[in-house]
Image 1: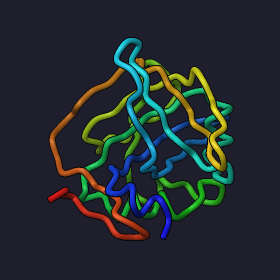
Image 2 (image 1 turned 30 degrees about the vertical axis):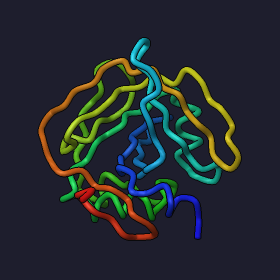
Image 3 (image 1 turned 120 degrees about the vertical axis):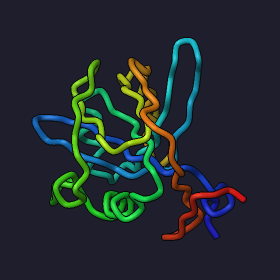
Length: 158
């Protein structure tokens, strides 16, 4: 058993980023708020992930909080590399432009955080990106998706 099994359920998010004209999405469940003042949020990305390269080049990201009804799209983003496919095109998720950073926002998201990367910390086989939240919005209510283990998800914590 892995520690992630014990530490679940955790909310799944889609992180969007852009570098050198390439937009990408990565599904993550390792993320957390860090501070109110200044408002900071962190995401943890595996060192082997294509998104790591884009995050380092762009110095920014958007945390997209998604409705459970997008479970298939989220699963696709977490199981395919953006190096080989356009995840927006393949999933049908639509883009909106962020206002404060150069990154797309997922139009269908429940809410989002526009984050400027202020620090990068190596944490074992992952890199922790700390982002200062430049803008945020809760667009609508909905059921969030939580990762249980392996490819099992839920929308409730009961």
